[in-house]
Amino acid sequence: MTSPTATHFAPRPGLGRTWERGALWLFRVATYFIVLCGAFVFGQIFWRGAPTVFTAHAPFVNVAFFTEAPESLHVFAYQGEKMELGDRAFNAFKAAHADAGAIKDDSYVYSAGGIFPCIVGTMLLVAGSMGIALFLGVSSAIYLNEYARDSAFVRFIRLAILNLAGVPSIVFGLFGFGMFVIFFGWNVSLLAGWFTLAFMVLPVVITASEESLKAVPKGFREGSLALGATKWQTIRKNVLPYALPGILTSSILGIARVAGETAPIMFTAAYVVRDKLPWEGLEKWTDFFFQGVMALPYHIYVVSSKIPQNEYTARVQYGTAFVFLLIVALIASTSIVLRSRLRNRYKW
Image (cartoon, rainbow, N blue to C red):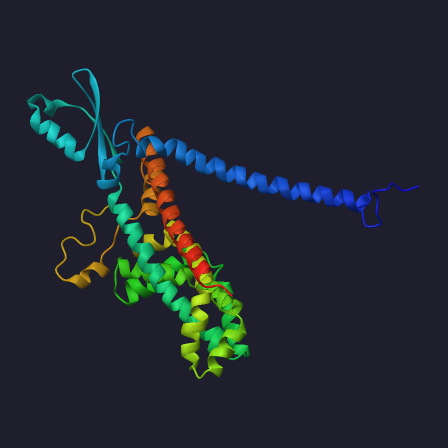
């Protein structure tokens, strides 16, 4: 006799049910494992980078690390006391102490000062490349979705865009070096870096933007056209505003990739050390676009692999990585907030 609460639709134990539970637990464990790995990596960066970024006294932030340029660190003993000074402070110390000329010091490159030029360069590279990528990508998506007819050539273009998304960044770096640095004669500059990074993220922007345009109901277009609006007026007033949240999603993905790339900017835009900021020492305003910059990912690469490793370079590595993650998170968070506001404003 069956139980009063039993029904014909209740799940029954069996081999299939056992396999389903096993698969569920496998997916669950895999998900938690990935989360734990990510938490471990980011935790290491935060734990080892926080002492470089923050201090134990007011204002509780290492202001010099955010406002100064990288310097060599000089470590020496003076009157029985161990001292650690950057280039400028060390030269001033020797000038102020007559007996400091015989000091024997150990110097460590890029282990003192700060990363202000790297922060400026990274922000400029991200802003310029994403501006170009969004303009070209959204324009291409509008053409492919709204104007182009479904033909073999258009399908080939879409396939080529998807294939470009899987091209390694080093290939884009070599392309940018050959095209913009050598052929166009832009040399290592912001402009060359902007276009190289923009072309690298174009496949992501085009694909995500086109999918966002497809998600807008056809009734919006048909109603606008029925009221006498032109094709472009329909797209601008009745399609693009509702597709913007999805387009901003593509910009978030693009920002995360652009900000973290080293190979493309190493060939086209980044210097190991540059004394002046991009807006300093300009003879004319157009010179701003034709000069290289320092950048956080390239700086991390240099201090992690191109100089002798020691305890002093380690704190700069983790401190720079900590700031780099904060900047990327800040930019991405701004895009997410803007996307949420647009979603609340444009609903159907």
